[in-house]
Length: 180
Image 1 (cartoon, one colour):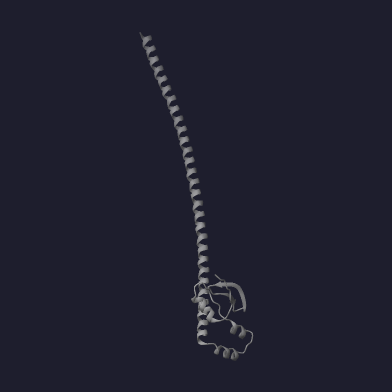
Image 2 (cartoon, rainbow, N blue to C red):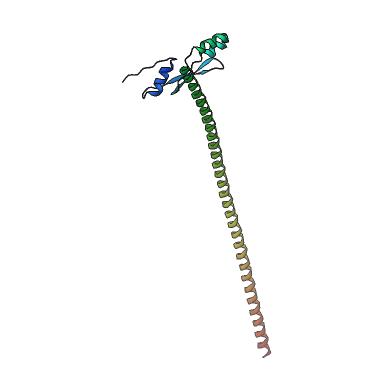
């Protein structure tokens, strides 16, 4: 098993890598706006030549660039167009992935916030239930104390009534006894 790394602008080698198992294309991303490499390695994607673009930006006359482009074989031009379409597709997919990642992160944040709010609401509800239970117990204890006090008062009144009835009976008995 051998490992080889080659760098080239030859479309035939790029095609070979695309068609041959165990052989992989890769390219370094290039920022055509700044005319600088980004130093980002794109494994699986063959790179395209930016030679004409760079030459034109650096002042190569358009007629010279066009004459040079005319010398490129049609199959190589077609391959370059295919690579450009691949790069556009990759860029669009990266943007879509970045947007999906952003949405996923926002969704995760919203989910975590909702869980936190749910937890806060549950804790608040538990406190409210506990406070209501304690208040109900205080009310019940108060009612029991009032009830006990009323029963004691009723018992006192019952005894006083019985005492009064006994005294009345006693007075009647004494009066009847005196009358005899």
